[in-house]
Image (cartoon, rainbow, N blue to C red; front, side):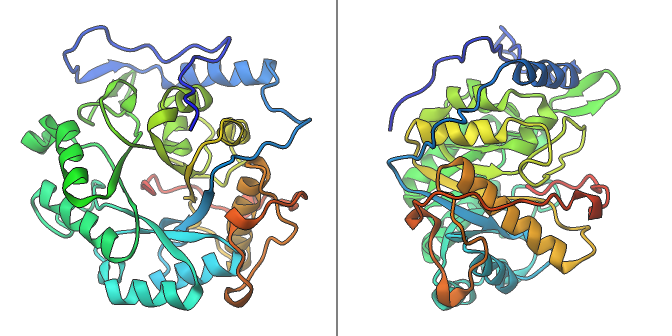
Length: 357
């Protein structure tokens, strides 16, 4: 895999503290940073319209169970198979079926889909799922991943109040990964906001750029809320990037998880960048369909998200809908042709502010 950690011309990073001390609050700069980055992409043509780029490596495209919440694990597999996804990511929650090995393996065999990854229950509202000890929770999740054939566990950085777990997080994640043989890919988050200040509740940081992680997950919606330059960030973490949550955002204070292309983040440009630089990893669609009134609209959002990914990764397929019996993996598709995308945003109600992941 080609290293690509150089800064892109004309772009500037979010300012970082020169002190090693972890401050608790900072100036609220996310909105201004977001506008500055958006202005850059408005003035500079970054996307290469003349050439179709595709990675020499396999890039799988999966569907997160968060994208069909509150539907069941079985329905997640069914939707992924219907639309032609390569596999699924399961968010481990209070729901016992999200950690039922026999059920998950049975659904994988039935649909021909892979369990690409698990999302550890590290969200604020899942404090005691699997185990009250944070390290044991990660070990259980990693071993669960092995049992269902998943090679990656996605996890959030700790909250400041999580004591020794937070203080030893970077090295501890490395140790659990080495113990279990499962990749633990830490996800970028965002600061919380109170008036003109940002509250930095994640430790060691919501921004993984300055931390010594071995593997990372990049989420476009989180980056939007944080005011990050998605394309530049991905170029900087390229060598550690193992996993991408495909979604979008409009610079809102909320974690929106819009379908890709419905927001204002440089999602298409970033996907093309990954393909152009022969990235190898997994893309997982993680969009908010929780308040979509019509089933047909929800399904169109899932189909459109897959078509968007295929188009900008150079994997466009003429068929946007596939059932389990005719399932073709995205990684096997190398044909030209763009699936038409209709924006169903008019039928989506406002986000309730709860994070997808």
